[in-house]
Amino acid sequence: MKPGTNASGISNCFNILRIQCYGTMKKHLWRCHVCNDIHLGIKGPEVCPTCGARNAFARSDMNEALKIIGEGEDVTSKEQIIDIWEEFIRGKEFTLNKERHVVETLASGVLENQKNHGLRFCPCRITTGDLEKDLKLVCPCNFPAQKIYKEESECWCSLFVKR
Image (cartoon, rainbow, N blue to C red):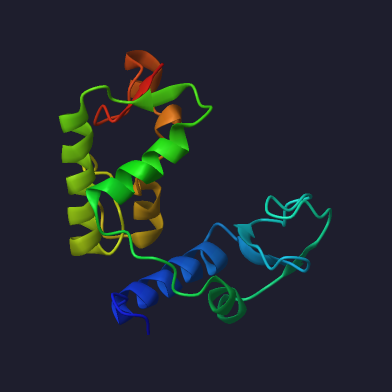
């Protein structure tokens, strides 16, 4: 195991994949036979987003996918969280809150949830203890579908706001 990686994080990853693959969502793991990109969904993408190969995805399983993915890098700082959010907003109708202290406070809350619950849940949402339901609360959540975003032009915690 890489330094900084813990067994509970890998175990949590297995649990999430089990729910996504075998729960009510009926999603499957798919592997691009050209570049080994891994996709989770009802079907594989027609075009691989990594290498551009067409119709290149074959069904995979958790063991194969996790071996290909590896342990990945640990996200442990506010700066890393904010970088993830800044990448997420590129080309979208929303941006980050202009007040930097708000963004940094929310990043701290996300990291605290990661430490306490094993996932980066939105700090403004309350988890239920049902992992399948709680996966919808991982930040960024699907806030554009929420009534508050449509009416107030911002997500629940005001992290993401319409441009």
